[in-house]
Length: 260
Ligand SMILES: NC(=O)c1ccc[n+]([C@@H]2O[C@H](COP(=O)([O-])OP(=O)(O)OC[C@H]3O[C@@H](n4cnc5c(N)ncnc54)[C@H](OP(=O)(O)O)[C@@H]3O)[C@@H](O)[C@H]2O)c1
Image 1 (cartoon, rainbow, N blue to C red):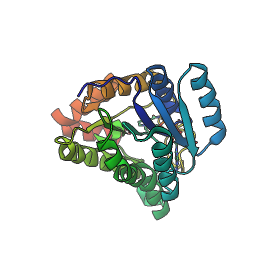
Image 2: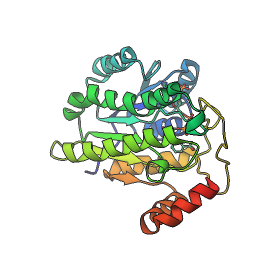
Image 3: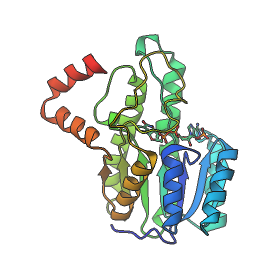
């Protein structure tokens, strides 16, 4: 379904930096009314100033997205300020580097809580509201590693594969209800993501010529939300990796085992 962002009510998680911040600014410029969330309130204050200076409407609720009470506060704020919601963007996410053998059960839990359970529970909470919305959509920010897993990030890959699978199933379930489900699968992006991983025990991905800017990923995500595209892979290198994995999986296995 095609949608105009002007006047749409959007909730964006992980808005305090990187892709979420860029997406918030672009959505505000397109005329969306924004409800933002992340843990760092000072960052959200600064973002609100930027958005208000553009003459756009935005508010935030700060907190940890894994906290059910925070999710309920977001629901009540959307109800109170916007009388509903049209687009939910699940963007907040964390990573960890290091082999599975050396990792604790807590690392797995934390990654799954932030990257999978929180977005899914936010969708469960907001779905009835979205179904009453105008041209409703759910946008889940996953990763290229939800298509091709790599060593040293087993829990992260698993959390993003889970979000990918959930999104595909939900898209089919909601196809008769007029709610689009858009999956965004970025490759390495120059954000605070690498600096804020919860554990660094191995090789961190190096930024290189294929690294994308948050602005470019956010633009691709917004384009997909506008057009109701099922999935966007906002980099050629990511697309090439997915193609290689589909067409020549044994070569892809060899390449990731050797180069990570
Ligand atoms: N950067 C990459 O290379 C890359 C590649 C593929 C996919 N992605 C995905 O893209 C999404 C955005 O990442 P990014 O690159 O923009 O990274 P980022 O700059 O680190 O942003 C992550 C955002 O998530 C929020 N967040 C993290 N844990 C949270 C929690 N427990 N509760 C609430 N908010 C939380 C952070 O805010 P606070 O710290 O203020 O809470 C921040 O706003 C993530 O889902 C990530 O997995 C990133």
